[in-house]
Amino acid sequence: MRQFISRLAVVTAALLSVVANDAMPAFAQAAKGASGLPLPRFVSLKSKSVNLRVGPSVDYAVAWRYMKAGVPVEIIQEYDNWRRIRDADGTEGWVNQALLSGDRTAITAPWMRGKGQGIFVNMRHDPQSNSAIVARMEPGVVVHVGECNGDWCRAEAQGVEGWIAQGEIWGAYPGEAFK
Image 1 (cartoon, helix red, strand yellow):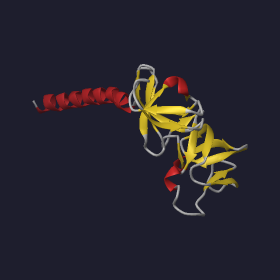
Image 2 (tube, rainbow, N blue to C red):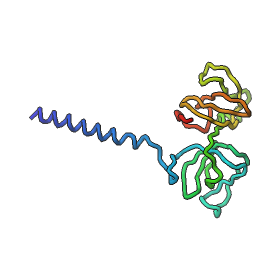
Image 3 (cartoon, rainbow, N blue to C red):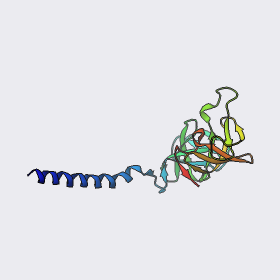
Image 4 (cartoon, rainbow, N blue to C red):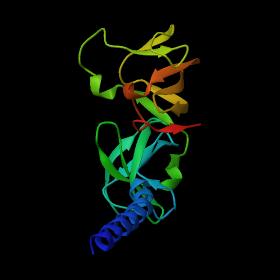
């Protein structure tokens, strides 16, 4: 009887292990919006004049107007051809998808804006903290992001290219890698 219970326990443990392993990838995957793309995700503003609305339609009031193309935003919800976005300051609202671009941009350390002088984000020649500094940027500078490896992002600002530590920008998730 003890052998039967031991074998039953081993079989039960094996089955639970298989079920748990099959369920794990489902939890690890990002949610998908109606477009089939992951939510949340970063994009940028395509136009230099973009109305941020309080709801997903032109019938809703304009809460804010962005006046610069290339600003990074995070899509957090989708409804028809409208996207609910969040900017680096935490402002949320709805924008028509036609005004958004898949081009990746980021803002250097927006959480450090207004914290005093002498605060910079270093852009380096190589993706290493001991690599030569090619530029020192103030917090709030918008950079174009070409790729991220999970720790560093290759970026360009005003004709200068280099690598910025991923934790010093808003526009890429921690550990996110893409090309």
